[in-house]
Amino acid sequence: MEAICKLKDIYKALYIFEKEFAEKNSITINEAMLLCCLKDGKPKAANQLCEFVGLSNSRVSRIITTVEDKGYIAREMGTTDKRQMIFSLTDTGVQKVKEMQEQNIDFSKLTNQIKSLL
Image (cartoon, rainbow, N blue to C red; front, side, top):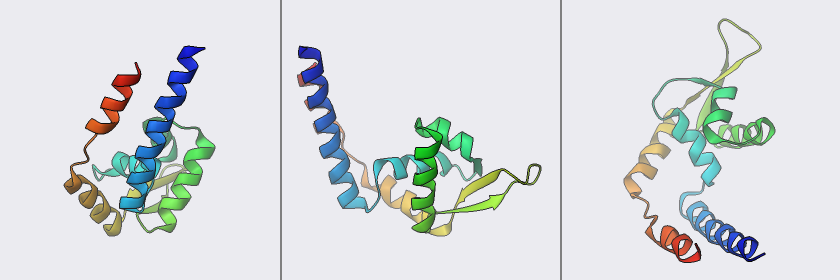
């Protein structure tokens, strides 16, 4: 049972980190991970985004919609398979990625909290 209590504390530390990240960047961690997947400039299919982010198809679909609504990504129909959607960063998305890269996010507080719990 003690392990479950520690796990709850780890989740709480991650939740606080994610909340602070979202407040500072106006984007969630999951949305940022999606942008990270596209930062190389190569368009990706939805299944590639799901693999990278590590969440279910339905969850990533909602994240894609949110990021698209914010103007960070664009979708286009696949060239070989018209049923497949391909996603890429917009100019606004490229700028958002640059902003986040310049922040040099400090994970030391989060990692120290997690280490202390283990």
